[in-house]
Amino acid sequence: MGTEEELLFRNFQRLKRYIFDDEKVSTTTSREQQKTESSVEKCFDRFEQIMFTNPRLTQIFRLEHQYYLDAMLRRLPSNYECLDSSRAWCVYWILQAAQLLSFNFDDQTLDHVVQFLSKCRTPTGGFGGGPGQYAHLAPTYAAVNSLCIIGSEQAYRAIDRPTLVQFLFSVRDADGSFRLHVDGETDVRGAYCAISCAKLLNLPEPVIKELFAGTGDWIAQCQTYEGGFGGAPGLEAHGGYTFCGIAGLALLNEADKCDRQALLKWTLRRQMRYEGGFQGRTNKLVDGCYSFWVGATIPITQATLSGVDKQMEHTLFDVEALQEYILLCCQKQNGGLIDKPGKPQDLYHTCYTLSGVSIAQHSECANSPQVLGDTINELLPTHPLFNVPPKSVAAARSHFSNSNDTEFSGKDSPSKKES
Image (cartoon, rainbow, N blue to C red; front, side, top):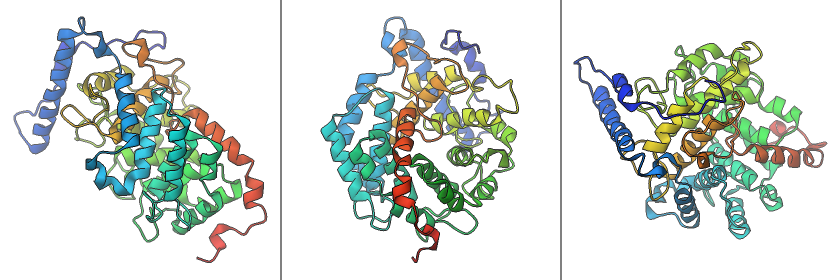
């Protein structure tokens, strides 16, 4: 697709030839696929029937999503009680989605967010999912991203890099893999979260080298025969783990340790021909969150190959179809975005569906924004490796580069400190 071509909605009547054919062998999997396609078909048919009388159907419901995010940041509903250990994640999902929509919270609200995240920081380093909870790599990633998105001096001060480094060493295994918490499970999410935090906070190169010795080799072992990455060596390829694998390798400049051609083929096959969105695993259903997890994996992989294959000038997945699926099938009229038609809105899918739209519009492999529908649909770009605004990445790395001499100069290696 040329970058100057206008993006158009697909011909939905012609698309019906791609509807799933179970070849007269009905299974649980085939029935779920047919049910999902039926719900998507209703969205497509409704769009064709009223597209000329309701132009809002081609728009992102920007104000409604902003109201939803604002309300959720100020008070989570009772059904979020089960996510008590993920409150740092809720903050990140809200702040990232709001940034993409060009929505800024007032300074007082952001100060309260910083104060809350500071209470999630543990004395031993790292962040827990909520105040008083154990340090865990996943909410540490979410908290660091959130504080860097805010980007104020108060937010940066809420990150104690020396104790954070000690925490990272405490969950590192000898083979370079990372546990999500002390004595916890090991998977590629842990490695990615550790790498992302270290790079975003611009830790000194000697610390990076020691902390991630062998990590690239361990991540590469997570790649499966299909081409994607599993959570650990020997596990099934999965869209979320695949993103963590290639993003972690790219941040370490070790992407050549995996089979990138096989990876690219696997990720491209995850885009559903009829629905337009991505599935997360082979023979699974479309899901809005993989708009980012798989959608970002493709340009990351292309970028690591660009020095080898000069023909990869544009994003290789169908950016029209992905935006179409999210616009027509994943938006709630009262705000928030969803997995697939019929599901309730939630913060996780709001963040990652919008992040996927941003990737589709602003992929680094494209020369100009590729926006489907109304021009107001253009979102701000997100950094494909961190999933925070590129300006936040630059500002954080610049800020912390000035702190390396004072925080780490003359100190023993954190790995040699007594536990």
